[in-house]
Length: 411
Image (cartoon, rainbow, N blue to C red):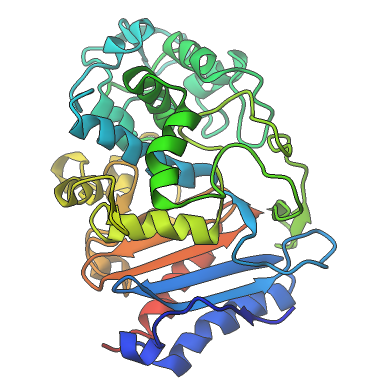
């Protein structure tokens, strides 16, 4: 199915500093991925100075190829839930209901006496010297991990404790998940390394306690409703707008349809968590991205102060380290994370030239397990949002999108 352009573009590309012919390469690239069978469907939105300059959809949202991708197609955000949860936590921080230096045990007493795995065959542990603090949760430096992420004793312990890997059923509540995590050893001393983890899930539980309401209700009332994100939440609306989910065959590179055990129309999942699970549309999530780009405010609704957004997007890894350099276990491949530090739920690019990137220093964003991705470039006043549903995350697309957008930006 060929490219579809949609109403809603509010600024001509040339007036926003883009070479229109060069920008057409972006749609051509995504079309080619569909026609070659490497992808099934996607949508991309490019905005500058708060105005949409490019919106195009490609391919289909369903397995049979009958229904095109539309701006109101619903996508699984997976880890693009994390920036939303991070914003919610920072809202509570601004209100004085929590501190970034607060030990997690202030809200979750079961985290009071954490132990750290000591490498070796005996599986021994030692008491943690530093408590897990909220800033560790926001930066993935808490010492937590994820089932199946790596081959070590701590990841094995997660599996034995019944903590599901990505794509598996999660038949437990957020409170139950946190209690299981608190009973397991940490991968490293809090604050001493970076590791992608369940940290934002624990943060979601703290939001519930500090905010006095369930996480999905807090996000709906304090984030989605003010921003007009009417199609965003953990509950799938009725209808046929949900994009099919695919997993890329490692031999052929082609997407194969997979069953999603976590989505049922009209039902809330058992696990409502801060790290994944949100469903949204390109239109809705674009409003969240624009709120960040506009310094915490959109259409008169302010969620965060501008200085808080700046703090969120700054690198908080010690010594201005990159994720790859500060990672434990050591990163196997850098990919999209190469040259990036980590802030509060987003990853800022530190030195574009060191990784041969056309992006600006300070460009920040995050992605999801099924290929969704966004970034904000404060220097160029530019945002890009990309939605697709193919696992695992396609670094080649994310990197190509940046190249294709910036090569068209001539002003």
